[in-house]
Image 1 (cartoon, rainbow, N blue to C red):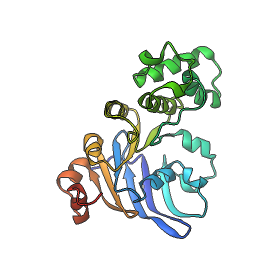
Image 2: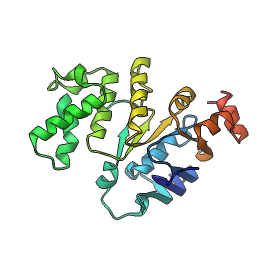
Image 3: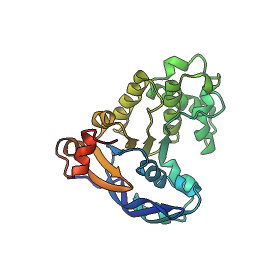
Length: 253
């Protein structure tokens, strides 16, 4: 039995230029778990993620209806400022995008934007989040160097640390290891497992092995529809739909 959801997506439909992308999506995302959004490329996974933090608003010719309930409020139909919504949801993209500034300032940027001015507290928090992502020992002697000098794997961990530094409640991860080498990918995966104690994690992937390693719950999306949703054990060991069984067996991807 699922606990009270952190996010409840209700009857969500989305079209871009009259082309249906998401069709009647209904999902309850549990807190402090890793929910994997699984499915082949082009099925609407990333679009769904963008709806959750309202980045979809940046697209043109969008027609969207339905509800996304977060903390009792429908964030699709709210008059609250969007930065407040996005602050609750840290987004980790497919490729790391460090800000064009130093390693230190990448982490400190969000704190300063949110009004923190105490230099001692900022330095303490920067160290905390770099340690949380096992980066501190690797970068502590070059904090003033450009973040672009880090390896891709280090940049991705830095971007995750930057997202955590604004103290979100939810981590949205869009194919977060697709550009990384296997060792860096494993490092990010291990961090997700640790972080779910304090965060709700929604992970988009098309990699079945990764979903098996990380998922507590799996939502399988195909052609913009939720085909199946349940615990990882149910999904992988006792799928209900024939198309789910075919996807798991690798008949299509």
